[in-house]
Image (cartoon, rainbow, N blue to C red; front, top):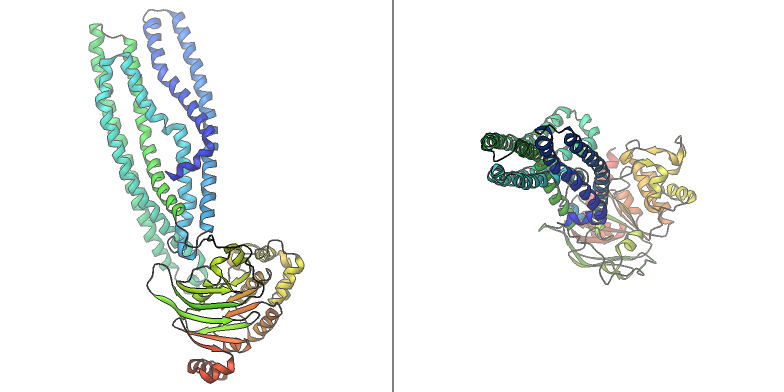
Length: 573
């Protein structure tokens, strides 16, 4: 199993923990024999010296087992936590390498559950394996062997009863693994509903949909409860069955032991020793319910974690990718580009061909669903085109290192996303080593500097997750400043000025023009498009017009309709 490879760096601690566990086990298996000696050679013979002698040996061995157990716990905890740390880190690293297509296979709520809850299940089961899970089956096997060495006839009861019980437990474990995998999927769904609610709390309150959302959460929560209870009942039902048969075995040993003592074929100490082994085996079986549940959940978690680790990344650097392909101008060429989203048959973009010269500002217009954002996402290779080529400064983007490509592109998505922390930290996210002067310059160009310096802590002002304590326009301008601070050769603004008034937007576009980068803006505003050098008009994923405002106003009926509708709206206001 691939998951086990993460335990390899901790082979020495694991071996040490297992060795200490075996010391505990050896002491536990040896003690019934010592008790038999105390009874037969000391108590029956009324020899106090023998009782003290072997009693002292038992005490010393018990202290050794105690020290071994304490040390084992420390080492097992270290190995388990380190294993979990490495696995969680690898999962996060893998998720960071996901393309948008990969994310469509794993909802965010599911990834959170896998990186947190599933990894916790696995690290706990490793700890438990080194502490008690390995010890329990070894205690059963060792107990049977030692009982047979003491007296074969009396111990035959174990040979008859225990193997069927072991097969029963294996069957329980297989059934439980399927059920707990279903439990984890339902936990994903609970997390998904919680995530949606927390993200959309303002909207829920605005529409007074609290009661509806409570009902929706209760439904998925109830399904999780039902499936978890069913899985736990199945695993817990194994214990009464195991204890029933083991108690019957002990009764059988006592009854046959009485007969053998009367015949003189066995001593009282030997019967006590075998009963002791039966009690220890019964204790080990009582732990099996907990072990079965833990291993069943771990098996389901291991499969889910492995799915993420084995997910094939569809966007990778190729052998032809070259680090030296850096952008010097920012020219963009689309050469017969078509695109379908992964796992769909719908073509979003149809045979797009156009050129954006270096330093130009180009506005992209089109109705919702025209393919504007999809076209944007192809430029930094968030997706790969289904057919055709995209070239930047004459270089096919597939021949550029992904990191190198994306470092030279400033991308501001449609939804302005900020991170919890200070304004300075959010700006530094665009360029880690950015100076204060660079931050001020970028913020000034984005028309947000004057707002920042009015805040109590200015650039050190803390903002909530996703910028909840900022207005829509402020979040958009901070997102643009974050993109500008990296001094990109190409700047992509995906409807990122929608919350800005006309004057602020005009100043913003003028400031961006001074950065000498190629700027491509998705917009629904004709007032924005007019300021651009060229306008690209999309309809149903097809390029139907490309030129400046005067050319499109003269040649494109759709553009005329858009202009007319917006100017009429302005006039009506």
